[in-house]
Image 1 (cartoon, rainbow over the protein chains, first blue to last red):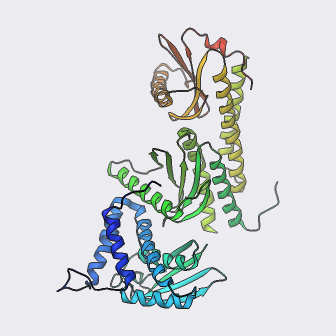
Image 2 (tube, each protein chain N blue to C red):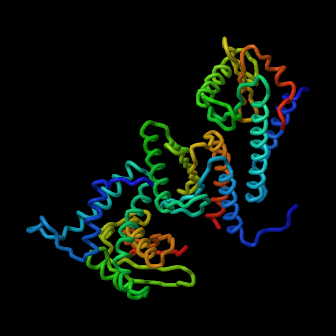
Length: 182
Length: 136
Length: 150
């Protein structure tokens, strides 16, 4: 592919991911308001800007875009967590759990790890995307599924398929993401 | 009558899906043939060079979704195929079943009518294979 | 029956065999799928072979096959393939309307003769075969014998 100049969104993405990777959550130009935002604002961005609005334009392509976006974040988080863990899955998961808590993404709990079957299931309790949302007809946390997929993909360096099999917004009380190693 | 039945129908259907993709690769100028699921994940692929499957899978779903929406806006109802004509070739995408898509990537020397004819003729079979495959 | 007619008849037989393979069947879908692919490949390979052979005949400028106005097979020297395709589509539409008005039945051939060149379009199964040559060439005579090696 020919060398292309970074777009403004790519420049912003780099700075945001660098900020996450640095572990430094304070942010400039927010002296009074600070780094935190109300969860409903995040959900508006996730379910409206990156949800229904995208769906208006992309139709059935919307979940793919959201999954892919989540995967990009998961790959960046994976790189951060993979540093100095010496390929130890437990340490890696520990760092991911901590990172997800720091970023208020949710409380990540490994539910099932069956490496011989190539399957991992991770619970995301208090999921940032769907907390307080009810009565949907199918799982809606494609972003988190993509993120978990990206995290697992980074550790195993293998293609994976992540699928949300339970969703709090469906009444399941938690979000469960199944990752198949391919 | 053939009394030999495959032990695992799902496996034989998946094998036939791969055979169909290999057949599509045999058409002049076709450089990749892939099945993409509704999340943009590539489930089956045949290719003659390295491709970022994550990116192409998501892009195919996004492009098809956008084209299908545009078609609805102008009252064209169902979208059967999206063809992207690029400087170096074509990308064709066609819905199969349950959100799965068949995508073909070609070089510039591909004969568009040949590729499109093969796609159109292949889709009904793929639909049947997938409805069997997903129900097993 | 001269050479080209026999080739067309063979192509039409292959097109029929492919159409029969497409009919719904109770057989295992995997076997049906493979059979359809083989029949389709036989038909398309035969179309490509005929296009190549006709394109090499002395007096013939070019030969191509189209499906829905898009190029499907072509001899080595076809230029303006999209213009050919557009002509196929437009001519077929006009001819079908005319044939319906006049009760001619299904359209089998269309010939456009210009002051310099002429173009013959022949329906073969789901495809249209296009052959172009100089106006003064007797197309039927040129196609009677296969001078080019197969």
